[in-house]
Each structure stands twice: as structure tokens, then as C-alpha cells.
Length: 96
Image 1 (spheres, one colour):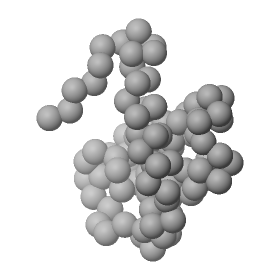
Image 2 (cartoon, helix red, strand yellow):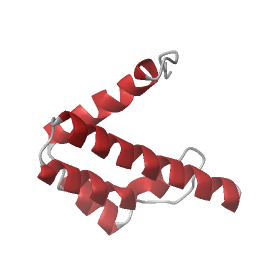
Image 3 (cartoon, rainbow, N blue to C red):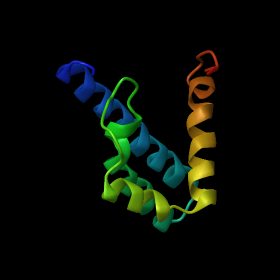
């Protein structure tokens, strides 16, 4: 399990990425307010997606938020997040 300070920082980072994605959607007009609200509800899942976190099974709140997600909203958000490095002039991220 990661050290508490680092785990907290990574959770904060993940939450920040989610909020940034919401802002990008709103700024671009890509998603409705409903999509933004649903994305915000996914912050309950932040501690389960931090690398090295050993949180066990996701909470009921996380699973509920995920089950309420619209596939188009979630996929569009992931595409936008994947484009962030390029938009910031950074190298593309390649995950194994």
C-alpha cells in the first residue's frame, strides 16, 4: 500500500483530472450539464484508480456512479483526457 501522503496526492491528482475533463467538456460544449454532473459523481471512485492503492472492492457509491454513466459521455471524456498531453506540447502517453 502506498504511503498515506503519496496516496492522498494521487487521489487529489485523479480528482483534478476528472474536474479538468469536466471543464474541457463545458468549455468545448461537447457534453451536456447532465454528463458533467455524472462525471463529478465519479470522484467517489478516485481512490480505486490510483496506481498502488489497495482499496479492495469499489464502494457502493462508486459502482452506482459508474452504472449511471452514459457510455458516450465516458468515452468522450477519455478521448479528451488522452489528448491533453498533445495540447500541452508534451509527448503522447503510451500505456502497455
